[in-house]
Image (cartoon, rainbow, N blue to C red; front, side):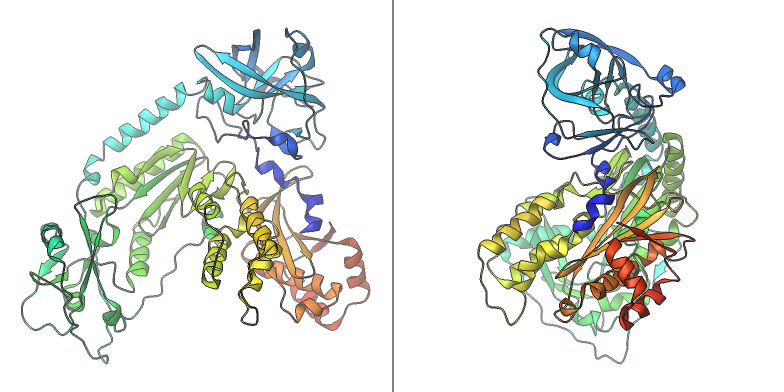
Amino acid sequence: MNHFAKVCRSKNTRGAAINIALEEAPPEKSEQGSDMDDDETVIHVVHSLFAATPTSHRQAQLPKCQILMGHHEVVAVVDTGASINLLAAEEHCQMSPTPALTKTNVKVYAYGQSTPLSLRGMFQTTITHGQHSISAKVYMTEGGTGMLLGCQVAEELQIVTFALSIHQESVMELVARYDGIFNSIGCLRGREIQLHIDHTIQPIALRHRRVAFHLRPQVEKELDNLEKAGIIEKVSGPTPWVSPIVVARKPKQPGEVRICVDMRLPDAAIKRERHLTPTIDDILGELSDSRWFSKLDLRSGYHQLVLAPESRYITTFSTHVGLRRYKRLSFGVSSAAEVFQNGIQELLVGLPGTINVSDDILVHASTIAEHNARLQKVLQRIQDSGLTLHRQKCEFLKDRIQFFGYTFSESGVAPDPAKVNDIKEVPPPTTVTEVRSFLGMVNYCGRFIKDLSNLTQPLRNLLKASESWQWGSTEQTAFDKIKEALSSDTVLKYFDLRRNAKVAVDAGPKGLGAVLLQEQGEGMWAPVAYASRSLTDTEQRYSQIEKEAIAVHWGCKHYHIYVYGRPFVNIARDLKTRLTICRDIPEVPQRWRLKKQKKLKNMLDM
């Protein structure tokens, strides 16, 4: 919303410094190659020789290397904690020819400093080290000496890649010791899944759906494979429940098919088990110190859990070669997702730094040594349990990883680039259904988009029953702005229980906005999540004071999981409205303020 700019040192997440040791790994790439100079950008440079209060011990430890900048030789300090390249003015003057400077709006902050470094400008140049050359931006500073080489350029010039390969070899040696868990489909030992069946529902044997002749050989082959793997078995005798199958070709594996059982009617008789799946908020709360990640994928996840013999009859299905039923948990069972999630979650109890969402397991840690120790414990637990992993889908020792539809790194969380690309490639909607589908995709990434409710207002109007379909310039502009606002470069910080928190809220004519921020340094706040919602027709007729009160009430409720129980939480709002509310409080806002007193202990100016 409009008032957020004054607290928005949050932009530092886009170019946030990584601050890791050279002997570990090159971190997430900064925006070195992007056009940062059109917008004011906040960038942290950690413990560099350009800091206002440099740490001499730190500088002494930083490695140096000789590079060519154009035709000029420079001894540069390599700092993987720096997100950009900096050059002192005196060094710039010695270059021949002297590169012309371009004005820049970029603001560079030394770690822990609230005053930006003084920049004269920037220039594009070719930087060479050994056999490697790249074109990069270099920012010239008034103070400091020499040159500082940022993490991305150091990585692209392969200055900091050697040590990482050693660590990767080490973790792969660890994985190789558990080679047996990457074989065929496993089976969870010591646990059988009992389906809770409602016997008051009349069983139904549905009519068989005939399989096309040219697909029958592939179906028979797949049935044989499933039977040999112990996943299905032949059926004889009375069969009260029988379901048909649906056969689909595997698009990436020509000649193979996927067999799906239509379990819609049997599912009505299977009682659900209510187990919780972690949300993105649950995951983010555990990653505040994590820098290294591995992702494990359970092979054919559901099929690794054994069905109790007395529960198998309800999974019976018909094929052209006879009746079969499942011996393992199948994808068509309505309660399968929750049962499976709970089973794997119980398996991982007692293992720190592990999170599972369905058949994906995330291992995370703050150091490589800690990561490897945790990974070994997880692999050992998996081996002891009888489960197996899909080797091609696993990733080990990454400083940036895709999980649960998001990208996690030391810098924070960002939307999955694949999802961002999918949204940006969506053509303009032609029906209300397509608008609803597009908004659903966007809302999944809503925590990364500031002021989303106002951006989507023209499109949401099309969903109203009273509105006739009309796609004009207003709707097209809103559609394009939403795509522009969503970027895989947007990085939000992890929520850290140890840091001060602040909820900034604002109310517009048709929507509310809120942002959860946490203090990153003295006077520096970074966003953890954005949120927004539209106002109802009734709420839009409220006075501005009442809208602001709604914003406070809704913002605190939305971020309840983060702010409730904290000893001190700030709420940032418009000063004029705050004074008005405190002096003359209408009945409804007064009630909301009293409710929020147990959560928020202080109110700050925007």
